[in-house]
Length: 162
Image (cartoon, rainbow, N blue to C red):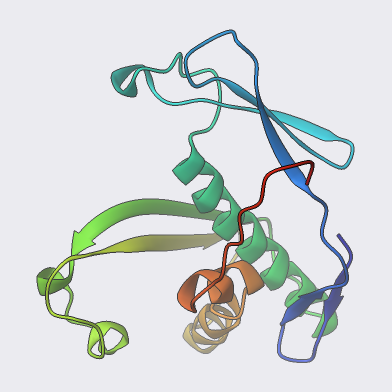
């Protein structure tokens, strides 16, 4: 996947590789995931009947947000000639009851049910001003994966090779 930078730190994708998950038969949920030349393991934790030999599906989603955020920040820093130290992004996922949400982002949603919440924590080595921290948070919010998760998506399912 080729990424391009815009002045505001947005990244846009030129093309996407097909991600394929194939059972290994080594465990109930164990999968080998391939995309392009890359291979990683997926599985569920032991508590869910897996062998815990790889990332869970939600771990992959959290990882996608974390890596995209770090890459978006790095592209922005390079574009603006900012000397940022090493960037590290942690993302946790939780199912949160909408009644417990008080942000404006959920004010237009139904007042019952659950929502998937991804909480992002950014660490950057070195000293940052408060102003730069605020700007980097706004740039992090422009991460394409985050934007995809925030808006509605369409998943089309067919039989056959994909």
